[in-house]
Structure formats: structure tokens, C-alpha cells
Length: 77
Image (cartoon, rainbow, N blue to C red; front, side, top):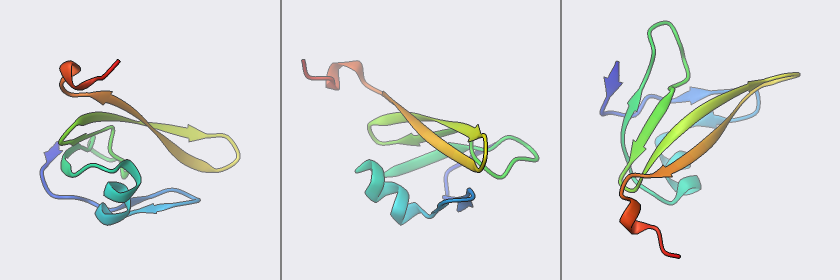
């Protein structure tokens, strides 16, 4: 399900609010994709990026964010 309003989520080491997420990525939130039965989103859209949320579970439950530009012409070489 795609949500256009933020839904807080957490891991063993961090709790993500919209304010913390936007500050960490330096971009504004637009939407997120939350699979049924899961607490952590799979994808998050911001103004400039599509972020894939990769879950890492070894000793603790954690996530990492992989950013892809929404507009390739915005990449400066």
C-alpha cells in the first residue's frame, strides 16, 4: 500500500520519524510503500530520490537506505 503521509518505524538501534528521516537524507518526504503485514517500508519517495529500504538482520534488526535519483539529469558529473 502506498501512503502519502509518514508512518513512523523503528529497528533495534533507531526509531525513524519524518523529521529525523528528512534531516538525515536532506530531502523532503513524499510517499512510502508499505507491504501488508510489515512494519518497515520497502520504498520511500522524496522530492529528489527513490529510496530502497534494505533490512539487515544479523545480530540486531537494522536497515540501510539506498538512494536513486528520480531525475537522472539532476546528477552532476
